[in-house]
Amino acid sequence: MNLLIRLLLNALAVFVLAHVLTGVTVDGYVGAIIVAIVLSILNLLVKPILVILTFPITIITLGLFLLVINAIIILLADKLVDGFNVANFWTAVLFSILLSILQWLLQSFLKDDKK
Image 1 (cartoon, helix red, strand yellow):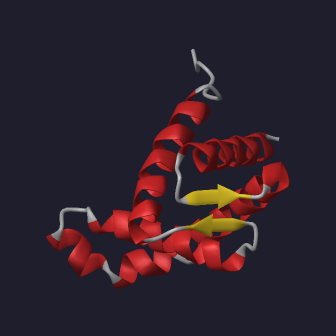
Image 2 (cartoon, one colour):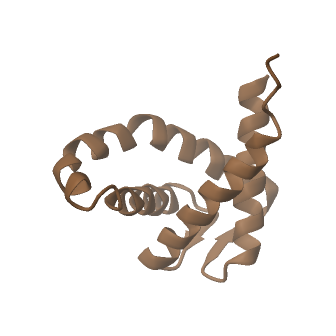
């Protein structure tokens, strides 16, 4: 149940950012849910491989290259999902940063106090 709620919150974040950023479009609520699912799968399968392959440059840039990896994941989702479009690389970087912040804010409401 928690996974489904997180997925819907991620879809909400994608939908909101698509309406806020001019270079990002998504076709409706169902499109946002599909993008959230594809991004979750890509983050699960592709991102660890990219992080391992680019580990030396990530160390040299003090972790800032992870922003590039996140943008690549978003551009890959753009190619895989028909109703999701990102204008260019820099829009993908900005979308990645804002999506991470918005996901963190939305998912902070799910945390239970463990007393």
